[in-house]
Image (tube, rainbow, N blue to C red; front, side, top):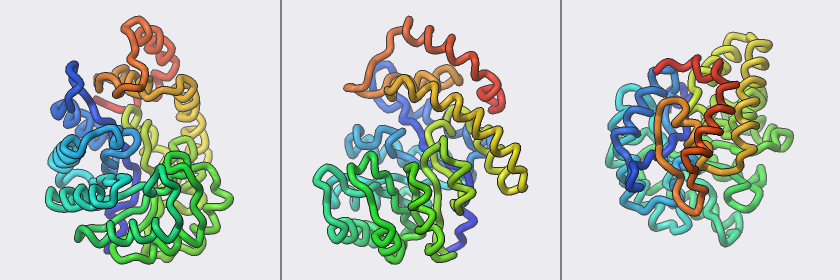
Length: 301
């Protein structure tokens, strides 16, 4: 397995909806084209940012199929197939394989706080359900429980598992895992505001939300790291974080999608029960976003 094909900056792509709340395939294609033209390595589809847990099976298959089609030959596609039902996760995994995905991924099975033994069985069965690589998605906040370093290393030993995506802030603990991961395994960071930290500790790239709306700044950050330009990397991460902290202060997915609208890609509302912004609320938010126009301007439409 040539891991260089998976290293780099990914967008955890939004799922856009039309005015009737249906998946907007045309807009999804526009977003993917925008990101790939700005240097994004590939796509992480139907994850948290893509509202994967809020889509039904047919919608998840549709979104994944279209993402693969739109990026074929231009970017790597990682399809998130995680589901509380192992059978549904395996079905989604097989579909991703049939449509030509480069890899699949899954968060820990959630809600019931499964034991590490059960989680291991879930991942092992899922990894063997499709003949393409799998990346374990470690997201303690969404899964509802932490994950031990010993458990992560065990998951990385499974057939077809080529690496892990870590979405969290405890890099002191995760660094001990990084040191013990075999060279033939991949590590990607998932917290946008911690991308620089992840790279310093040994990650091979990042997957995140804000890569959708301002892809080029993240690519520049990655290039600065690879070029040994640490001051440039630090300055870029600091400026990116100004935007992240501002949007996070709104504490709702609808504001994330509103930022995409500001960038020129109207993704519609986030699905209920997320807040549905009024036009006045959007206008006020857009006015506040003007302070970050330097970041938005780096990415060319």
